[in-house]
Length: 71
Image (cartoon, rainbow, N blue to C red):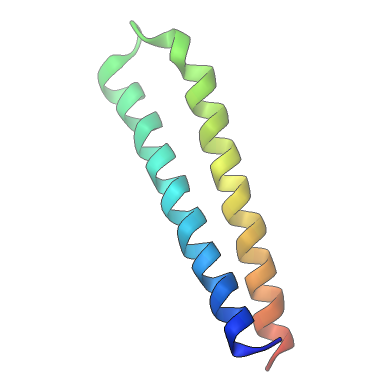
């Protein structure tokens, strides 16, 4: 895999990590500040956080595999 391809994968890892962190902050804010009144939002925000973390995990695994294969 070329250096350019690795940079693209690394950028995707950083982007998905940022998005996962943003979702985690939204979940944290809900838990800390708005529960129990906003309990109806819990499942949606939790699912979005899970999906964002899963996207990061997949991107990170691709990057790790490509990085170890190029050494």
